[in-house]
Every structure is written in structure tokens, then in C-alpha cells.
Length: 229
Image: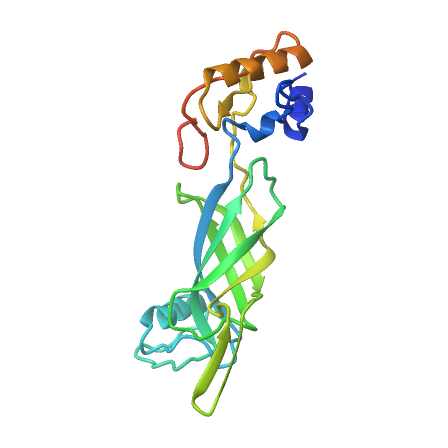
């Protein structure tokens, strides 16, 4: 019965008679939302457009740490003049009801002085939630939407070159616990609090699913990463 009601809410079969508006356009379902993920990583394979490491020491430090984890020791004091590596921040949204093994898109943004991420590859980057737990791993080729050219001391650039995306670039490794639908109750939160509208929605639901009372009116309260249930 709960699954049938949820399906009704999402596809909008329950409408308000007076305005024929879909309930899903007027409310949000408590406990159902995206959760932000973030990570720090390295993009390699850039054609001389990476960070100027003398000005961004964290890039060489990160590279040394990564090589150390792979069993490669960089001698202390080595001055690595790399132009094909860039330090980046990686962000993503973890959708509700995501399952382990599913893929999500990621956004990759330079945090140093790299000129462009075009042609680069993001190395494996853990993506964490606000609770500092790893929820996904990102890796892949960065797609940059901008373009640029320079000649004779002049340059032309269209859109941003220091950021890009990786479609399906992260694999979910941890599912988000949820109490959605616990106890056979679904709580709806009005986008704009209005008692009359709340009553109309309640009546519409009860007409479709007699005996159901699953509407709460008040400020939204979500149970997401790092939030109380």
C-alpha cells in the first residue's frame, strides 16, 4: 500500500480538483533529498597547462604522497617542475535511494593556477559527505566545455577552461541510510505553508487512498548525511 501511494505522489496522479495542480509540484517529501559530496584529487595528462608548482606547493606535495602510497619514493628536496598535473576539487550530488555500484556525475574544478584541464584524467578520488565518510570514488577523463587559443601575445577564450565534468565519473560505494516510510507514514512538507492548501492536499490524498493521513505542515526537516533522523 505504501509503495502504491509513493508511486501516486511521484507521477502526479493525485491532483487538486480546483486547480488541477500536481501534489509533487506543491510539496517535498520529508527525508528525500540530494546530499553533497566533496573530494580533493589530481588531474594528470595535461598538455603543459597544469599548475605552476613553484606557486602551488600543495600540488607537488599531493603528488609525492600519492607516489609514496604506490611504493615510489621521491627524494627529499626534489624540485618537481611539472606542468601536466593540476590539483582539483571534485564535487557531486548523492541522490536519494542510491545503491552501491551506481554511477553519478562529478564536477572537477582547478584550485591552483592551471590554465586548462582539457585532456586531463582525474585520478581516483574519494568523495566524502559532511560526516567525513566516503560515499563514492571518482575517476575518469575530464570533459571541458570551454575553448581557448593564443598567438602573437593575444588570446581568446570561450567559457571556462579550469573546470569540467565527468559523466558517470563516480561509483557509489556506500548507501545513505534512510528512515523514509518508516512506520507506514510519509510526511509531506508544503513549499509554501498554507493551511487551506494543506487541507485540500489531505482531502485529495484521502479520496485516492482512503484512510491515509500522511501530511505534515511545518518547516522542512531532512534526514541526510550528518543530520539527525
